[in-house]
Amino acid sequence: MSSLVLRDLVSGLPEEQMAFKNSHPAFFRLLPELSVTVREVFGRTFQTTSPAERVIFFLGNICAENFAEIVLLGGNGNGVAALQLLRGMYERVVALGYVHGNPAAADEFLAYGDILQGKFLRHARDLGHSLGLSSADEQKVETNYAAARTRFGDRRQWSSLDLRTMARAVRYEPAGITLDQLYVACYWEPTQYAHGTPLSVVYRVRPSVERGAIFDQEPRRDLAERAIRFAHLLLLIDLHFQELTFGLGSRSRLIELETSAMEAWG
Image (cartoon, rainbow, N blue to C red; front, side, top):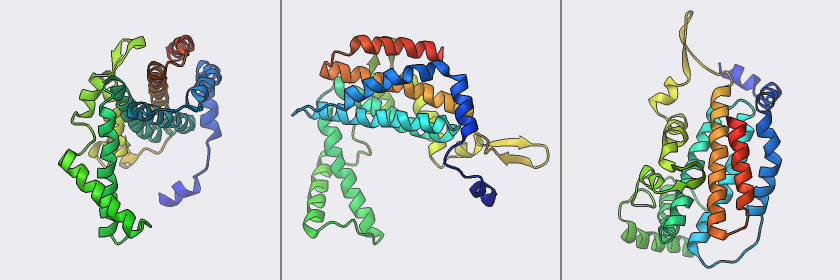
């Protein structure tokens, strides 16, 4: 099986690309305008002293990048991989939306980085790996880690709220939804594909008369379409909060993009 997988490994699947383009022409018609808007929103230079604005802007950048990656994977029929990326995109959109409504939370988001840096250093040290840091830099990481531990205790994430509770506090007005309504489709199910869970196996096995069960390696166009459709929605939510935060004057264009998205996906 492994040799078969490696022999068939290619950098793109033209048949899948053509099938996706042919089945979603409206989506491809709106991509140029969407791309222009993304470049204008994230390709600009501005100055700020606000931690909340920095978190919203840079998380939003990553979300736009995630969207492009999901389209690339999904357009090649790699639905499982596209869903795995959707999970992280959803987390980021929830985080930036929550910080928009609760600017003080940006300090927690940024400060928790010292916890993660400290754990990174300690894991590497325990396993005999070097991160290439000087002794002074390692000591600084340790000092910041100790201070962050005092602040966060044993908390395993940056917020004292779980993701679904945060999502419930974030409202996307154009669609009249709170982001917890996307939790199952954009987070819970994709998590099963991304992690070493029993469902990551169950979801990929199908019955076979000859062999009882086989691992399904066929392109998953259904999952690819779902991943791209929800990534498109998450990108629009991202752009919505960029507009609310920075007042870019792009609201009328976003309304047009939202209308086009509804027409493209039905």
